[in-house]
Length: 145
Ligand SMILES: [Zn+2]
Image 1: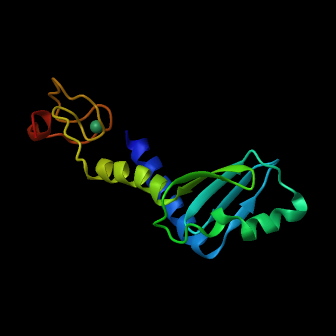
Image 2 (image 1 turned 90 degrees about the horizontal axis):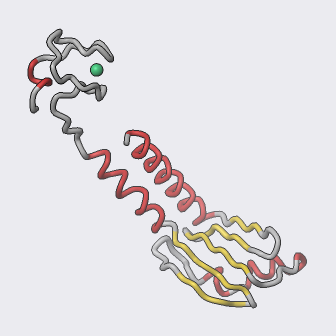
Image 3 (image 1 turned 180 degrees about the horizontal axis):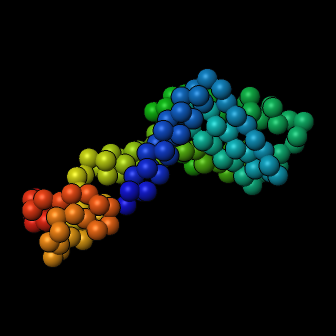
């Protein structure tokens, strides 16, 4: 589970950075007839409509879904406009999804009686030394802590 808390932590940091940067800079990509916008602390995906390349900037500037969410405290939204279906996901949502489990995992102290700090099972160990990592293990770490 060690990798999980690192993955969640890295995700939280990346999402937080993207959220902060997106308050200042917006990124618009429109592969095919889909539109992805990262801006104002949200990610917006629009699909199902027709993207006129000459009007793409116009969509970006004028589409209602652009300015609707002004802050990182925006709400998730599903709707339709300009013939597009769109989904808006404020970045605080994935941030919380990643950071809350990460915090819990970081705060949770491993309680594994009878095990070395490396995770090796020390049941029946008499040498006082972990055969896996070589760490000195006292009687205290062999029983319940
Ligand atoms: Zn060990």
